[in-house]
Image 1 (tube, rainbow, N blue to C red):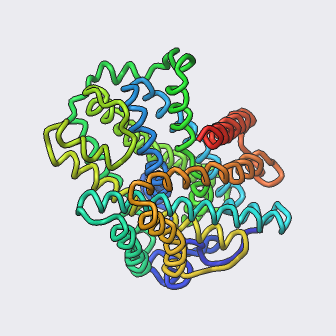
Image 2 (spheres, rainbow, N blue to C red; image 1 turned 90 degrees about the vertical axis):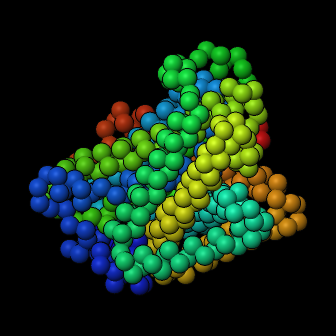
Image 3 (tube, helix red, strand yellow; image 1 turned 90 degrees about the horizontal axis):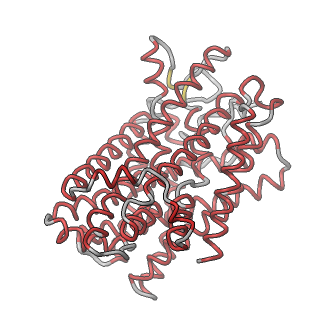
Length: 442
């Protein structure tokens, strides 16, 4: 049975916000009215989840692939996004079929000791995610404002103000804010592409797989890196929890319509992430690879080179602003994911602002230490380390998700089709193997 409590997304002060919701009650964001109104009521969760697919790890792999091999690995960005769409669809299906988020479903199906272990692993994953966002946001602030990295890292603590703001204005406003930043990021990269004047025929050829990948070990490594950097463990908990902020009817017809509309929301949002990641690779190809700069992997290096190569300082500024916007978005969604994980696994509820301070404090500490002790350049290595941690924890989110959604006993008529489960299991195994390979070779 679902854990009857206020929304894991809106504990404490959030419970008094205009759109506060009881996930198993009747106070959620209403899904009613015309077909269009019902669809619009379900739009939002996918765009919050999409922010996790545009983190600094994705930026670094797309920059490296584009600068070294041009557009040749663009099809890998598309492939990894298709994988993500399928896996996130399972999170939506679980939320609607079991009327629980992934953490609650694990708590109901697994032994207590295993749930505690999973909770701890997911908390580590969320802190690692936040560490990556700290570094990414700090790099953006440093590049844009010309301030020391340590100062930029400390400024990122101030994002708790956003949490306080959305406690007051409500959850639906948070979704609108994140969506607006996504539109801004997409617009910034559209402008970047216009300035870089890519060869669109070459871009189109990059959508076709190349046999060279089997003969070039570095190309293969970057292709695997693109897949490994795409999926983040907290996103499955986040998506299943966000879907439950909607008030969906209890009859099968209402659930099936909600499932269909939510899947469209997820697919459209992840296509936005696909376009942004693809734009980063194409930008790196046209701005760096085409000018003989074939080893640009650091965000700082890309910022320094992009203005002189494209002939516009605006290109560099847009790059830094987009990086900051991605960091802010991921900050908000990591906080929500942390609440879902903590409440679902161990039923402990923290005020989101308190949780944000704790998580960000833990993430900031190593970033400040590394910047002071080893120098600002070493923060890039810390970013890589955060991706290693995410790779290690990923199977502990993927395996329960595929297993639970394949169970007719738990999902009833909303059990995942066998072919979907088979493909998802293959993808989960491939991504897990990918991450293990990257960790070993790194």
